[in-house]
Figure 1 (cartoon, rainbow over the protein chains, first blue to last red):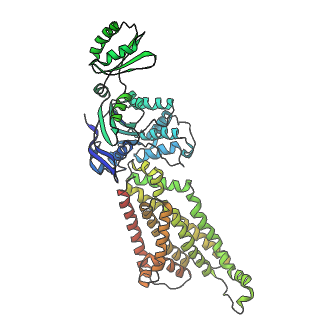
Figure 2: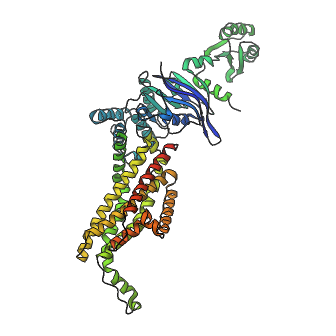
Figure 3: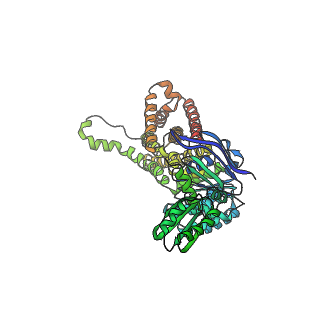
Length: 309
Length: 254
């Protein structure tokens, strides 16, 4: 499979501040790729480099097979882009903006009108006649997504595409992104981890300009997986927690409110065998025993927090 | 090529649909309409205001030459100042608002972005000047009964070359200086420097520095040295400034 985006040792400095530090990145064509990181991690800088709005300090960056440094109109014609804070000409209407953007991509006549109509309807702006100057942030974001799709781009770069949307708008946008799978490469930055978990195949996590993880979603969860077991007993929770804490398969044990014992386990099978034995030894009655997987948020916190001083 | 045309169309539409359509044409039309009557009644006004202080001194009767002179003087001072202030943010207003990034992530080159702005706003200035000069010509003819076209249009064309030079200058300044008032200040500084440089004759007759003075002399019906060099160097400098703006803008991060 070809790479839609390929970065090697990508570094970007702003004076003394290093925004991106030797980032290696490979985004396969047709994938939906989530670029995660806390605020200030360097996500927007990365997207600005991808669009050619900024230049790398060092390293190489290729988009759709061509170096960004020499990217011409032909490469840009294959890219759709939504900025984190979308800016438009306030004197235009949404329809005029779609026509303007479509014309820049060389679209004309009926195909342009039909495509603009379709996307405006999808964005919920079909009947809006007002000038963009009167739009709310959410409406601007919807228009931003619609205009990014006007040319049916090979690569869609979305910077925080759902950040200003209400829950319904978020759902619609995520469904739209999911529907592009395998036809368009979608690279979107977000700090809303549930969004990434819902639609993306591959995840990269950036922290303070450094890539801390990049893998397919399932693999990432598996790699950082430390399943946890929740045990609720009728009595003797404290003694049981102490007994579990001494076991080799338990990474950490905590006793929560209501006597719920939360155990992070490194060896799930061993834990599943040992816990009933310990329960019977302590003479405790079991009320509930559940095994839970770490979600992306927990993986994220683990990776990002791990890097904190 | 498509990017040039589409962005140029947007730039033209923006002039018509925003404040730009009101400011420059209003200033130009105001002076086109009021210049000739002001020239006609200036002696009466001075007599009324100065009264006996003038003594035996008699002001010559006004002619179309005074109306033409008034027109060129207004263009070279107030209209040129307005141009400088208006175009201080020609490029930087778009980089600051994010619309430059919006456009330049599409198939449009930065060169097209800069060139289109300079060309379309020069065309807008030309159109406004033609309308203003036509009105001055008509009002002058109506008031003075005489209005030779050649001197007025020759002076207006000479001034237009200066106007285009200043649009090119403001294009490069608005690329270099992110703040619109800052670029306008730099533009006014360049205007002052050019005015001072015009004292030296070789500069005056061979560069944009002397264009305003030559236009005023032409309007007054005075003989002027051939303006060919001044026009040629001004147009060449305008092209060079826009090219410089495009080169600098290419290297800028947005």
